[in-house]
Image (cartoon, rainbow, N blue to C red; front, top):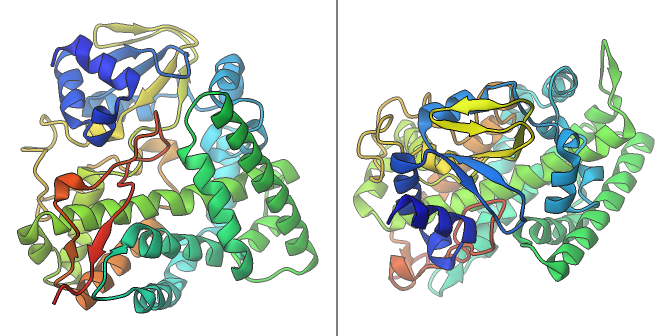
Length: 410
C-alpha cells in the first residue's frame, strides 16, 4: 500500500480500514507521518501517526483544544447542537482549562475512585450472574457496556431507573456518522441529554447526596464555582467518555485475549500480571483511536510538513502506540512487555491527560479478572476474524461491534 492509498483508505474510512487500520497507519508512519486528509466532514485535517510527533503534539500549546477558535470548522463537523455540551475541560485551553480541571480534580479524587472498588465488584458479579453460561451471549451488550455505565452513573449519582435512557442517547452520539439523517439523530440525542442533565443538576441542588455530581454543584475554588453551562457540559463529558471508552476497551481486551490463549494464561497468573496485561491492551488496541480535534493557532512545521494556521489536527493514538521506534515488535500483543504503562498514549499526555484513567484501570482489572476467573474456558463463537468492528466513518471509538461468546462451552 502506497502512502497515497493509505491516505485514501483513512480519509474514506472504508469498511476494510475500519476493521483493521493498522497496516494503513504503518504505511503512514513510514511515508507520510504528518498526513493531510479530506475526511467525510469535508474539513481539511492533518493526521499525526508517529509516537514522538504524537507526544510533542499532545503537549503543544499551539495546538488549541478550544474549538470556539475554529468555530466554522466546528459547525461543519458537529453542527450547532454540540456546542452546548462542549463547554468543558476537554475542549478548552489554559487558563480556563486549568480552572475547570482543578475543580473537577478536587472532587474526582483517587480516594473517591478507590471507594468504588466494592461497588464495581458487585456490579461485575451481578452482571455475570445474569449471563447464560452454556448459550451464546453478546458480551458487549450484556456485560462490557452495562458495567462502566452503571459505574459512572453510580459515581455521578444518576438514578438506576434513568440509566438505560442515558445509555441509549450516548450510544447515538458515539455511533452517528455524517449526512443529514445522521446529523438529525445526533441533534435529537444531544438535545435530550442536555435537557436531562439540566434537570438532574437541578434535582441535586434541591436534594444533594454524596455523589460526584452533587460535589461538582457545590465545588468552588479561588476563581469561583462552575457556571450552569460548565456544570452541564462537565457532567456530559464525564458520563459519555466515562463509560463508552471503557466499554469498548473491555470488549477489545476480551476479544484479543480469547484470540491468544497463551497471552490469556500469562495475564491471569496473579493480580500484578493482570494489571500489567491491562496496560499492554491499552497500548495494543486502545478504544480511543484518535485524540479529539485540535487546531493550529499559528503555522507549525512538523517534520517536512507545514500545518497551516487554522488547520485541524488529529493525533492517532492507535498509530503512535504501534510505532516500532518506540515499541519493539509493536503488532504483537505481549502482556509481559516492560514499562508499557509509562509509555503508551492511550490516555493522552500533558494537560489533557485523561482524568478518568484511574477509574478505567480499576474497571478493566476487576472486569477482566472476574470474567476470566469465573469462566476460564470462555470461547468466541466462530473464528476471531469473523468478529465485526465498528464501521461508522470517523467514530468516536474503536471497538468490536459485537462480541459473541460462550462462557462455559463444556
